[in-house]
Image 1 (cartoon, rainbow, N blue to C red):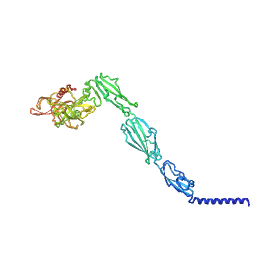
Image 2: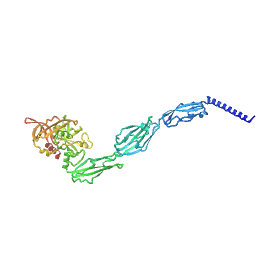
Image 3: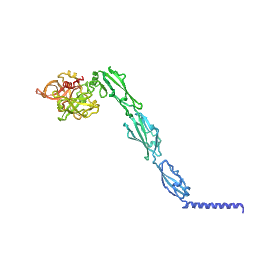
Length: 542
């Protein structure tokens, strides 16, 4: 047989064998013996995680044939939430499994600055804090929360939410609105970041808002010649960050002060906190004679509320005014006026503050207002009430004095030292009184307050006779001031002022004389004389 024919026959035999093997392979791949099934039709995948490409993850079947499969997971977007198909090819089979990409991962938040020091009024923002946020999903919001301090109110809202969705999607830098801290202190600031699936991360920052200590000193010091000044009584210091500062931490420079020479001298005050921040203030110390100092008070050129006044005859003096206006005086003198209740007799009347010294507030009233009661209820112009002790009373003069102690705390039988700065004494000018003629006819007025501090009675009129001897209530030769007003019950003991604010007397009541009914008052001279008898010193301020 020719050699060529033999080669052709061998070729046909090989083709036949391959054909038989192919047909057999086809029948084998289609046979139940080679068939596989999906073991996972639906699965869940955390965002950012790659889908599996291993056939045995998705398929059930003979161990030897499952690895022969091919997995195509190219449709899965692992950085975006959604439902995606995964195709598995096995022989002539094409199977589809679905992967659900979900997001339960919180954003990653980092910050370049964990501890930041700023000054009051300086702004902070996401940018200035170097805040960085990473997340596979869109950021929905950024919240500045728990803005707090253990010491001071921040002046900021408890929570401020900033919608960051649009900025994040467009790639805009996250420069949230700026915050300003108005006060010094140490603060914690928690920043919460949430994605659109409400996964939240927090980062806490510490903020130290540095501010120098705060010095509190009077606007000016007014001092009489030779007076020793204890500046510590009038100054104070406190710090936003450290709690341990007190007056001893204040340095006082009095090198230019000349306390025995009239003039104005600067005195400087400085205090430095633990962080090296220093506060400085300078006040002027005005040195003059006692009379000149008192005249500044009397004319309202200086004020005890805003100035330190040392060595004046009466730093609480309500003073006088240049223009006559009785209605104005009636209202401006309210800090001098009190209501007095006598519980023993179930009666009430009025009184006025005649002196304030380091130990007592002394009140003048009529003897018939307090009668024989040794303790009365005193109410001041702002409704504060306190028990007062009757220390002197003269039925013949119809004058009584009540005293209330002053201490550092105050109680129902004493007044707090700080409270005393609200009160004023009546303005007494004995020389002015002595200069008035008997029939001077000057305009006068008074106010009464009730036990709530409210004005309930007011009246104006004039003096008919400055001093007249009358027989009142069977007391012979009683010196009285005859006035034109018609007082009512409860007005007894009220201070009588002229239109400039000067005390001229005290309401007493009515008397019958030669068939006429008169309204009478205790003259200023009688009040001052009895004060000197009782307390052994004069109270003539002018």
